[in-house]
Image: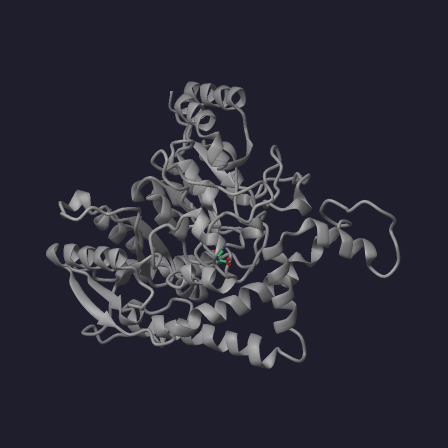
Length: 479
Ligand code: GLN
């Protein structure tokens, strides 16, 4: 019955453009009926799960919303997809995104922009990006949960804009095998769901070591992390850090109000609010927009129409004519911009001033976080930089997910690329440090607060590396 409702919603909400490929009603129903007959079908038994179209599936094409992959079908399933099947889940379809995950509004897609449903007659709003299709599919009941990818905020931002929960686990916990690389040192498979409880169920199903992914966290390190987490004495009263540098001029008054109310609510629950400083935050966004395009320019070199991708028409001429024609026709403008930017910052002339500097900033951002968390970073030797003086240290950080409410699609037309990058200012730091982060909707009306909130606002909870469950637990309190 749940499957039937999702399928009906998929038909009714077609205009939102959340899906690039659908498994199809009859296929889904057949699988759902088969699942019904099994008694113990796993934690995702019969649940419809949508999968972002940059994650490989063997029975549906994987386009990454790019013209260059418009006819590509992977010969294998990504590890996360195998795990979804193993847990009893049914892949509902492949969701729309910004081409290769590059964007914050899911409007740079070969298959057209994603929109989110809005009151009739009102202007169409951004669904957030790049996992906007996954977010809209969950928010409008077209599936039970969805997988996305989060490189610099692409799961958290669309979750915030569409009013659902978005969870980016610690880097290295969930396998990236079969996930099309954008910036592989940052790419993380994330989860979009209606509630933090659902996030836990999906996370348990997809979390695990995978020898096919060289950046997958080793079983021995996983064991060490759970050991140190089990030894921690957890007070019922938590220390909640408020990063002062996140109170930027661009923060919309409504978002600031929601942030303050969320903190007040947590304090009323008996938790302690502790202002903290993360001084490198200001530079994090620029560092991200040097590092991510640099990695992208390398990762996307393989799409040349020979090894992968749709080849441009014409003779296989000399001097790379075919390559440039294929890539010129196959990639969209934003992808081209990033490839050019990345190739430049990695060039002999610019590498010292851009790429190397950005790597240094990345390290400073990581150190900022290690200085404020009471739990030592389990990836560092003996946790030497962990903060042990419990007066100052915090268990989690709480801040907004995005500086504003979802903008209208029309207003985005007037934005320059650099203005558009500002929407990632609060999500990028946790990405650079590989930390777990959850965006949870803040609903003013539920808290009996007088002033109506005009759109969706997400509050973000960030925790130390490996402390994913604490991030989800605190998000649950706010939910
Ligand atoms: N908006 C950011 C970018 O365009 C983040 C994207 C992502 O997390 N995939 O790079």
